[in-house]
Amino acid sequence: MTAVPAAGPPLACVVLAHDDPPQVRRLVEALDPFPVFLHCDAATPEPVFRAMVEGLPARCRLLERRRTRWATWDGVEVELDGYRRALSLPHVTHVALLSGSDYPLASSSTVSDFVRTHPGSSFAEHHSLPFPGWGVAGGMHRLRFAHTSWRRKMLRLPVPRRLPEDVAFHGGSAYKVLAREHVEALLRVVDDEPGLVRFWRRAWAPDESFIPSVLNTPRLVPGYAASSTSLALWYIGWGAERRKSPPWLTLADMPALRRARGGQLTGHPMFFARKLSTSGSFGLPDAIDRELRAADR
Image (cartoon, rainbow, N blue to C red; front, side):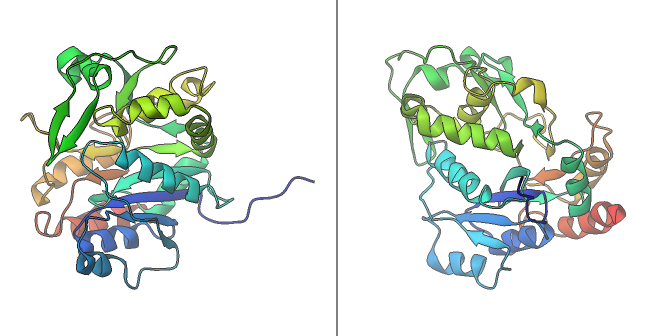
């Protein structure tokens, strides 16, 4: 007799946070009733950590704290920790990865309806490498050379290394919504292919290439391409200026957020935005709740 999964929200959220407790707590509140698996960087000062986690609802579980250096494998390790915990909930059909500076543009009921009508489908903004938008060598330099980081600076060993064979190299945004079966397949690859993990531990910004490459390699995750889409579900206001990370969103970005939520920017609705902060985005979460999320209810 087939077991029926326990009732509950279809989406679990893995949230990677470093600072700004008021923003993180507001994000957790906005994600209700989704279960949240929250990681707070081990380098975060203890008072900030306590302000972030004390009194959180029971649906928010804390992940083991790790130190997550910028653009290193550390972030992938935490993401994988979150996926393993999320799969312990039998009702979860999809898992979203968010940063602590993200915020939903849609109500939880709208997001739930969306994933329920796309069983087995993942939504991740991936492109094959080399990709012109990734600069020198289309981003392949991130893989061909071993890297580490120091004080948010790239350190590269100037000796090319052999690339893994039979891998469809892809890259894209770290923030995504993955179907349960694709998370399960990803974790199997992590457990069964230690050579791939060793290789990517020294790649630059592996959170933007390891999981996209694994998922898009047919021998590793058969059928992923046929059941997934590269739709961007996150609005990110990069602007025209070349920069390492997105600027903070403000109230001035509300017209663009309205268009993103309504599907006017890309032809499909976006459900999340980044980046927001308590100091830099004053009033924006209130406006999003009032004008966008409340309209879904």
